[in-house]
Amino acid sequence: MEILTGKEEHLSGILRLYKQLIPDEEPATLNKSKEIWKLIKKENIKYFVAIDDDKIVSSAFIAIIPNLTENGRPFGIVENVIVDEEYRGLGLGKTIMDKVIEYGKSQNCQYISLQSSNHRADAHKFYESVGFDRDKKIAFYMKL
Image 1 (cartoon, rainbow, N blue to C red):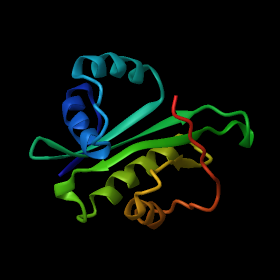
Image 2: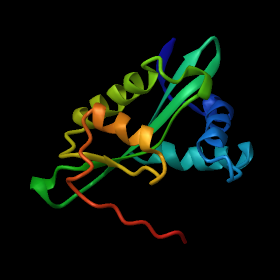
Image 3: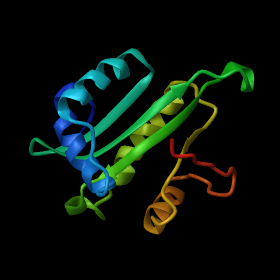
């Protein structure tokens, strides 16, 4: 098992995982994803992927946001954390989140945050187990 920085060549595997993450939503096409990837490369967004025998089995990304508070220290937003259904319970989620957290620290982030769907109680327990505090802030969401 390898944990790597995500690359364009990993997109089809990441999109397959996103279908597990949000089964009722059709992910972007591969061509559209390649267009988006060009934008991602220009921003301070880092994808991490876990690969087992050429199969993407986990993914997460962190976007580093410049900030004027906290003496100008940025913060990170973590999104789309997913471990393939067949690989859950093996510690892979912790491994990939450790990489995300390590990257946030390397970018001098004052904090990182993430959102999780209300119904994902197991994911909430997991995020708390790796150090996230659900009581520190309240997230609000507006679908556009």
